[in-house]
Image 1: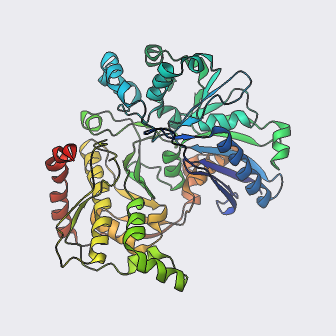
Image 2: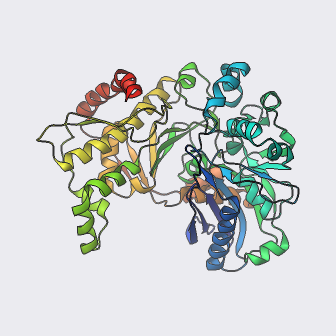
Length: 500
């Protein structure tokens, strides 16, 4: 039986998972690495450490699956991060990751000269320091010798291909889109943007449709990893659309809800949509990993990290109890939630906001506190606030021509049915729980199988992804009223945040 390996190169770690022909997980391996922040606003990864640990997880997962059994590999990658590579193929710097905001002061002058609407209509994205374009502008201004001397500029997907022996690496269209150097309609590097920024597109990898054959592993490298030299690599892309494919969210109106430290909605659509509403609300349009499909990314940077904050700051009693009873503290905290909705309303901006506001000055706000509010009710209000922010993004998508009819949830927030019920209630939408634990790895493994079998990856997704339960929202009158109040709070308070 053929096996297919998916590797997900994240910001905090990398994971490799091997699946069999039927989508059953055979083996997995994980390694962590740490963000380097040597100056305020800087966020980097040691490129060589990341690639070394990618090799470790591939070797371990392949060994557990059986030597030589892996037929094909797909790569899911964090977006935006890149590394300069010299003529000997060595990394010249650390990788600048999404949360690095050092380029923020360069954005407005450059965009004003180029034209923001023109930039949006080419790339489908709105300016933000997370994107590679602006990080490269910073490098050009502050590290000119490195910028001009680099032989290649590689993101993590194409860098891993390069390290695995593919001399001319490529990247999936969804990852190319996150650089803001890519035309999401023509699917080519845009020479007008690159020229204005002084970036040589010859140093960038080939952008290719997700699931395209990128090449084969070098024989010696394959042997060192327990793989065959006939093992091939396909293009994958940005991690969010890869997770969408792995969750089976490949039909118009279906979205994956990745519920982890960050809450992220990635819908699938059968056409690109560019509207003033999307533009104003920082909601992008770019390629999905499913062929012929497009996606957007709506996200809140405050998600499960808020639950963790509550556990660490206010859940000491439950943490001790969990240790004594050998349970999960999160489960104990969820069990204590009241059945009734919370009386407090929370704006969950305990980090900078994501879409729609992209506000770095905003702060978390809890309204409605009095001496009768319990710890359990406060926790429920916090979790409702996170879900309300998702609902706000869904409403904007709907008003902009992106109709989402079904949510498929993955990640830590999908583990408790009670938590999923709260999310369904607060968003007013049915939420489907899946029998999928590693959607990003599964999505790119599907692409490898589709390439091997010359099959439609959407058909594979429908075979591999198994829905477990559909959670129907309740208490809709209450949560509709609460949401109508919620969406007016940020506009009313944003000037207050600026003065804090």
